[in-house]
Image (tube, rainbow, N blue to C red):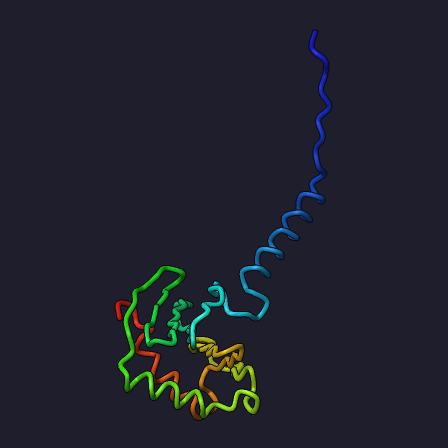
Length: 154
């Protein structure tokens, strides 16, 4: 003879509460609570430039190593490897020497213009995040030097 089994069911209000809480948690984790979404882990290179945003919300990253080798990533997929010329590497080192990381704001991003690219420059434990709405001197020049390398296929 079969024994009757107890069936536990949640009340309708409890189900809706669960759905609302789960949705809120998913939205908070997807938004990153103000951080750049889908950020890659620290690359360990000499310098890295991460670009996120734009109309489609994509992200790309280029990492330059001490020997001038660079590696790109697009949305988490490896893009390729290349090498900076000696002149480009010399220019990059000179510009990094000019950047006063201690004197610049760690984050310089405008609240206006949500479709802008946001760049995150990381070098030896220092990080500056900018959307280039404010001029940051050598940081802007480094972005101009490395930005073409962020383009898919380069």
